[in-house]
Image (cartoon, rainbow, N blue to C red; front, top):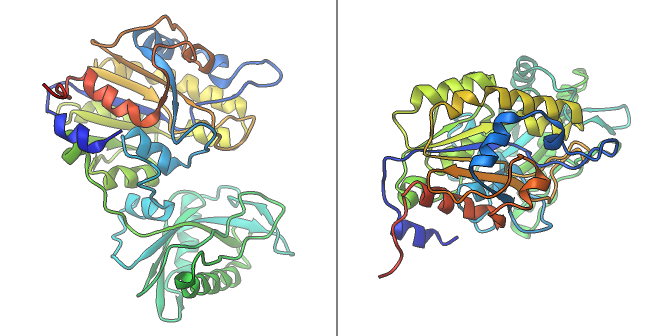
Length: 400
């Protein structure tokens, strides 16, 4: 999508758009039943939204390319995820209100578990509590390496942010997280000559962190990835002329929303809190990004039954959203996370757009197989935003 074109024809209107993003929405069939999580779940409200809207499948990046959460969400907001690649570290840092200076490099961190031989046995340290994470972050905070100060900030459960404060630091670094158990953490490597010193600093810090955590099983090691500096992006106000609000619990998604100019609402830790926050703020904004994480977490944990249960819980809570009668409702995901795969995949993601001016199709069921037959067909995720804007009468005619 050409953002300059959209900027040229975007106008304000009173219509309201809600974009509900069910993280990791897409699935694959359970070999025992032949049904995906969506096909297994009892989700009458999602089925009703599908019946009232126009349905299809969206590729966050391109066919066959597995997206990270950052690129997947950028695409949903209409930004080219390849041209505007943002590192996970910057997203996490901004999401917890860490002010990044122009020279700072941020990385996303996981506490993990290693055995006596240094082999990773649990990548998430058994999902330690957020309170334990904060305690361990204090232990690591303030370590200096070659004059570079390193600040550690707790996020949620096993996750933290590491920010390296110094001059001439570079982000062209590999990751220490091998994304699997049964192997040792990877050594950080520089991807170009300029980043060699930064790689040495990070590896030295990891070694010091390992020594400090040695007696803190199961969180006795760290993994770092997503090295990044704070990017500069045109805002949704500038491009779309929207007044947007983000409602998200997890810091990374709050950070991403801030980077594209959204206001970020304070909310609780439960799904019902998010819908309550939407209702409380509904009069003040005209675009709402509402993010639900638990579908993705269940998929990454390989827990098919839990992902089904989460979908049913979301569906049961949906009347709190649909009762507001948004002029345009988009329900989709940032990527697929099938429980049978246990991680992000390249499979296109279900998407439905519902509104007064939508051409409905014959789809009556909210599922991957049903949406293959939908009127949207298979589209790029970057096409979702202009379609939502058009259906909300927020785009004027192009040309004479």
